[in-house]
Structure formats: C-alpha cells, structure tokens
Length: 382
Image (cartoon, rainbow, N blue to C red):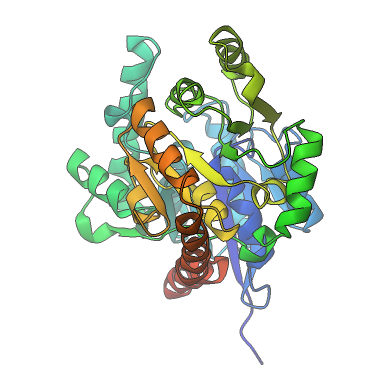
C-alpha cells in the first residue's frame, strides 16, 4: 500500500491581497494530492477574499484562527486543538504572526514546522508611521527570529538577498536559513498575443499599435508608483497600464491627473485575471523601491515580456540584464525612462528578450520545481 498523504497546514497571517497570500493558490492547484493533503489556516479572520474563494473552489479545508493579536491565548488553543484533531504532520507558516505561532506550536506539540520569510526584517524597512509602531514592529520581528531559531525546523527565504539581510540582522543561525525561490503555473500565462492585444486596446481605450507598458502591484508605499508616474511624461507615445488596488490608489490617481499624464495612464484596479492581460503588452515595468522576490516578475517572463525593474532585493536573481530585461537604480525616473526608450527603439532586442524571458521562467521558476523543493523539506521531517 502507498503511504498515507502527509497532512500539511499552510498558516498565513491573512488571506487578503498580497504576494505571500497569493502563493497559496498555485501551491494548491499544483500539489500532488496523493502525497499531500493540504489545509490552509488564517491567523486572523476569513473575509471572503478572492484567495479564500479560490481555495474553497479547489476543495481546500480552511481554518479561521481568529486571533486578535499574538497574545490571544484562546485563539492559540484553537490552533493547537485543530492540528491535533486533524493529525497535522507539518506546518508551513508565512509572514510574521504565523511564523511566531508556528514556532510556539512546534514547542507545544512537537509537530515540525517551517516558516517562509517574504519581506525584509522590520529594522531594515522604511515605515511611514509612528515611532511607537516602528518600535513595536521591530520588537515583534526580533521575537519571531528568536522563536524560529529555537523551535522551527527551518527558515525559508524567497531570495538569497533576503537570506543575507536576515543573517546580517542577527538572531538566526546560518544553517537554519535556506533559499527556496517561488514558482508559478507557467501554462496560465501563455496566451495568444494578438487576441489579448485586441482586447486590451478595446477595453482600456488604447490606440492601435501604441506601446503598452504594464505594472502589476499593490498600490502602497515603497512600490515606486510615483516614480512610474514621473516616468510617463518622459516616454511620449507609450501607454501605461497599472493593475492592482491598495491604500494609495486614490492618491496615485490624483497624482497622475495633476501631473498631466492621466491621459496615457490606464487603471485596471485589482484583477484576478492578470494572466489574461500580460500577453497583450510590450514591456513589464517594476519600479519598486524594495522587494524581496516579486512573483509578478516571474509571471511577466512566463508571458514573454521583457522586464525593466529596480535593482533591489532579490530582483537581480530574477532579471538578467541584457538577456531577459534591464535593471535600473531604484527611485530614478530618468534611468527608468531611458531603459524603456532603448528597448522600445530596438524591436529585435525586445523579441530576443521575450523568448529568453519565457525560457528562463520555464527552466527556473515553474510551480513544479518550487513544489519539488518544498516537498522534499516536508518529507524529511514528517
């Protein structure tokens, strides 16, 4: 008889909009159900998000821990009762709150756990909030590293750059931390270009044949959207499609309008069909000021788009300059515009980069390769 599937709990802070949260969907779709039985837990409350609805459609059992904060003992007891009742074999936590509780869970139940870190330590990030908020966040981050170092089976960073940042911040033994690059479902992004292009021009009122540059991002600080809007006026004739929503969306819309570039910027809002948009564009632009390992760049490459992005975080582990796109200094609209102009003027280079980007995505960043690396970790401790 084949062995019973490993019962795996993915524990996330929320199931809202975000890169870490969105990974649960390709993971659930691509998982070998004969080897793993997946549960997904939400540290906070379930709020009927797009991620939650898709996981339910896939038949993944969901757990609402409903914790108000890290000190919510009743919620922690609910989590302990759940993993015991469902005979969970391995816990894989994502983001700070879930990482803290996964380590405490391992201490309390001896169930092995891993934690994936998707963003830089709090002390290295720029916060635009109060001193009290910054101190509390840094303290919470230090607590997470202490607990993970002591009781987790391993810490996963999504890029080598992020691994080095955590090791420099201290609190984690080097042998405890390893890199596992995220992966994507490649087939979803291989669309007919002509058909997708025609739909984009129709739906977003873009003149036929005009260059379309696309950005997909949560509209929040440090994503560099203000840099992108400054770039628009430096690239005449091109149209910029911004896909995503977030807390600064209205502010960015106002900025586009008042700076006089609104007529060449199209706002798509939050979309669940990004795969149906990318193939019709010419270039993917990612002006982020800080990013550990933006999965959206993998999606753009799978769709055959050359990528122009900031040289920050783990982005150089994705984009190969001169081969799959170009890297520019963060926060520099002039450099970003120059890189865009250079590529738009060289269609042969764009075609070559398009094919190289697609091939690199297939070689390095498939969901199958990602799951194979994670599956090996789960099986070693289960």
